[in-house]
Length: 294
Image 1: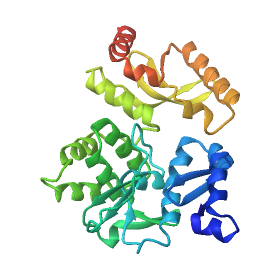
Image 2: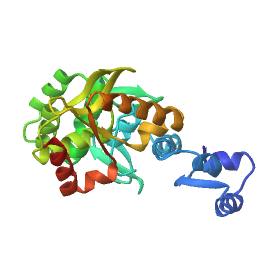
Image 3: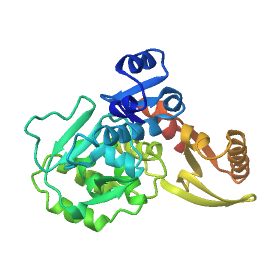
């Protein structure tokens, strides 16, 4: 990643830079900051979002006094929190609004007080702590999106007592209702954004609540189901793309999944498998589960 001044120092001029961007060899991530296009194209959406934050840090290295910290969704990305359906802007927090109010088109600035106790170094950048990040995001987002972050933050070890104290000290602030609801309904057992949203949808549709991460034994070993209704021997599994493509070879994961499922079916278990698209077809989702429960 290079700033314009760095490209000029290695022998390029403004015409060369413009030509390289035009031919697709360089990609301009933000004003005055570039990355090799082949590297950028090889990154997935999650890594690209992180690179935008790095580009902001690199691009402002010589132009900022460093009076800001990365916060909200940018801090969530730096901490590795699950996020869903949110913007790709760089979020920064400052104690006071700059007089010129020029953060940049790719930046969403927030003005609110913070203490050094709420700041940590993450990936070499100053960012809000895990708890402060969850607190800020939950107050800014809609309830389902806030719940995704709250679930994963608790799973990563966030201090729920500290979050409760922050909530108690924030009476009257914008977004506190959403924060309170997300904190009350959060479940650290959730292993993905899809599981969190499935649980939220079942609660909203008044479906009998299943047990999350339900453990059961079969002839091939011990297994955990995403959700289970034990009495009805019905399991609900969320088949998100991440589950199959991020960690192990696709064929191996799917083979083990099907092997486990066959063994459990021999013991009388039935399975419902859902994908992202099913969460947007609420009537069909509810009817499918109620029919299986009956």
